[in-house]
Length: 235
Image 1 (tube, one colour):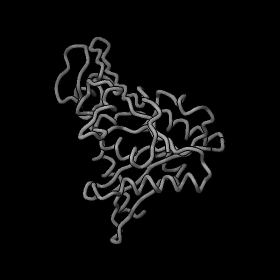
Image 2 (spheres, helix red, strand yellow):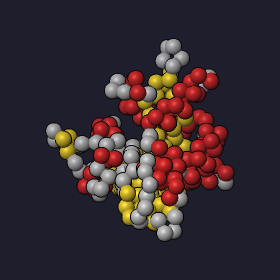
Image 3 (cartoon, one colour):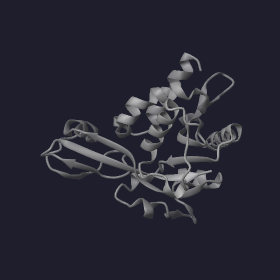
């Protein structure tokens, strides 16, 4: 990847997610390590003009328990598990998906499914048993106070409402379960006020732009805490 493509990559990641996710300590501290340890598990689609179309970020892990027992900590756990396994020389047997992103100008052209198919090829290449992903439903932020159990069953025109869940299901994925603490974000009131765009004077639950669930604020103790639920799926 050349410098221009790398900058496209960084800009695309930044524009794909709400600002709240970039406050994650796991994202801040671990992403450079993922890129360093697992370059062969970062997959990119480049067009004929050397422009970035989309990418799939993954990492290998070892998991020998039933998939139904995958942890509630989801995405955070997956990152820590992969890094720890690499640093302790544990041979992986599964591929973990961290994110699949298509550049805005190429959305709706089927590239997400192409990237998923490339992930499946990685499984075959390395002889892995599963391709597990804690997915973040695209439209859940429109219903931040709805329980995820209810949201995943929403239908529109007799189809699964959420487009990202739908893409995975039509690509052959199976839903395993919800991981209710997939991402944990913690910070002082000042941080949450910046994300909210207004002063926070009272303790309670607050809606933050792009968040899938409300944020719990404790003004007296100067902190706010956010747990994001995702959905474990497997190929």
